[in-house]
Image (cartoon, rainbow, N blue to C red):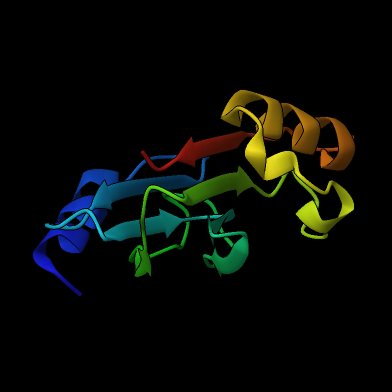
Length: 130
């Protein structure tokens, strides 16, 4: 784990009743650091190939002790999708060919429309490399 990754973890801090995630570029912007607490998932796509990360179950401030951090390769061809557990874990962009080529807001809206659970709130954040 690099210094920047630890900084993301520190920034998450303790809170109550939520999941949290943070991201930061590596020194050469070829790495993206992530840290998460609670029921948060992240999927990074580079050249359309997914790399899935998820963090432990729990709620920030209630038994989740330390954020887990990870790093993924990052380029101008990368897209990052972060979501809370209010989105079904079975979401899959293969059901929407070509969706990654659209604006990040549209990607988030389609995922929310098609995979949000009716029994929970859902948050979807999509970030594209540039």
